[in-house]
Image 1 (spheres, rainbow, N blue to C red):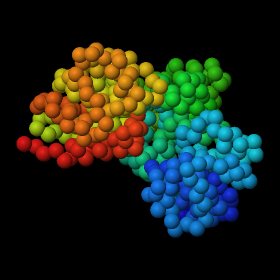
Image 2 (cartoon, rainbow, N blue to C red; image 1 turned 120 degrees about the horizontal axis):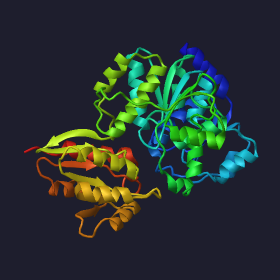
Image 3 (cartoon, rainbow, N blue to C red; image 1 turned 90 degrees about the horizontal axis):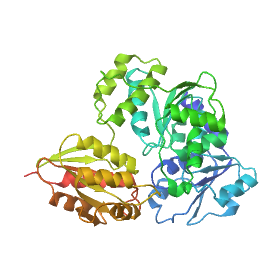
Image 4 (cartoon, rainbow, N blue to C red; image 1 turned 180 degrees about the horizontal axis):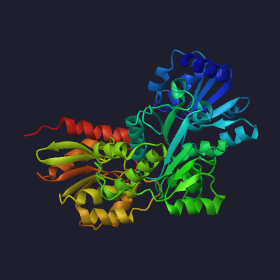
Length: 448
């Protein structure tokens, strides 16, 4: 079967002129490039980063002679006389290069939506400003426990979704975490997953959307807009109502009461995670998975790296890694969860801004945090203006100083919580790098 599928991939892409817009360093662009090049495409890889910046990705592709690299810039000629443009997420909405391709009637694809069209799999898609990663992995664990042999893709660290194609048989279950950028590809292709979950909708990425919440909502709405009869959409009433008011009636079956029974135990901390568990349980029931399996997964699933992750204790001080907290609301949820333990909190937070409002986070920090250590950036500048002058806070430019300053004020019984509520750029490569560095410093601490 695998050889047949690989032959099909070669038939689709062999000899095709493809421009890959965005190589990056997370492994997704590289994975797409590997698949196209191995299938015999005539591939141009273009990225605004330089060859030096992209050296690890280029090294991984060195075996392929059918890749031309145009780096440090984009060129209009790479977006004409091509069979397909495959673009990375986060390309500006007003990109003149994509506009040029559209003028030339060249199809523009994205990896997750192209995968959905080519794979003939049964797709579960999960989006939301917060909680989508947790829900994605809960659904995956439930499907795995039920013997459904699911595949995991989308916005998953180190996973290039298109590279799953050789592993997928018709009707296989594929669970995709989808951010608003990836859903732009679903809108362009006018498709939606067969089972869709949209957890919540809050301001995020406003630097990208230039303050336009309606455009952000429109991108997210592709998770359900193109569903057909027999498909299922799990969300909250407000989101369903706004989609139907804006775009017309939905064709799939809507579930808007995905609440977990009060007597069900879950290992994940926080009220927000009970909501996440409710979404996952509703999707699992749609798949015919029994409540016994669902309950067992919820009792044993302790969370994902970088999301309120307990690293351990050193000298009676508990360390929690919430590095994937990139919005103020995420940090607020973490502070409320850990404040309920009654243990004093030293917060490592702040960083770059996505044009978001930090008023509520500042209030929570003032109420619940013993001391704050902030990374430099515009989000930190906003927080500092909102906090009282006498509030104990320091600003640092690296993780080593952040951990050192946090430890200098910590006593046995305290919590040191990395929950930035902001993006990582300027100090770290991305939120994963931020969390990896925090873990490394924790691992290097000695216990006396």
